[in-house]
Image (cartoon, rainbow, N blue to C red; front, top):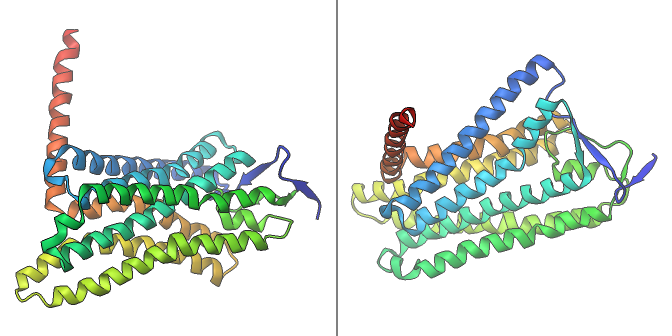
Length: 322
């Protein structure tokens, strides 16, 4: 096959979901709705945790950072997909593709690390309740969040930088709605052994280790809950972990679904459908999972929304006078 060096001005072609114009209009509306719900839902969670003093605790501090990571995660892919549908252009530059891969990995890794940090927070709260405030002090919480961001930002650089050493064939069609790293590596004409080694090494550090930490935390949490004598105490302990467990199951379940679908079948279409769950549905559902199962967040959100309604009514009264 004819080769074209990636260091030149080369573009990739994102094939997206469908070529049907009617379906594209429907798809645009669906993607836009999902994106707006995701951003609005996660922004409300962030505003609630900032504005309500009752939510100034480690758990909600980590949750607000998770919401921030989810906004970044979806903003890396969906706006570009919407632009491509609207303009009927599927071209993405090499620099744009590399940037999209990097930020997608950064925010995805940040989700992994924050879920592990939140699992540790639940472990301390349930297994060492008397020492919780001492252990999970503000300084440690800030260091854990800052550390997770730094690890994500620096840890994803090798995956991205090693792409620069590759040359690509003239066929640069990516059967996806964004520049997915595995799909981009498939288009390389040069040897990708080093890239694959780097990918699996980084995945071990940023995915396997956090998941191991989550599993270890809950292996300690569940026996501690079962040792609680009262049913009310058990229910309260389980309820504090319920939302986190549901988010973890959804995040890793869809992520593993993407991985196993790509391994089980060579169909890029199946991988595309699985990625939709991973990149769009999960970040959109997270705010609902936490708000519906948490009375404190619901009260804070109701307070914020009521204030927004009051401001809206005052604006309607004032602007006609002006």
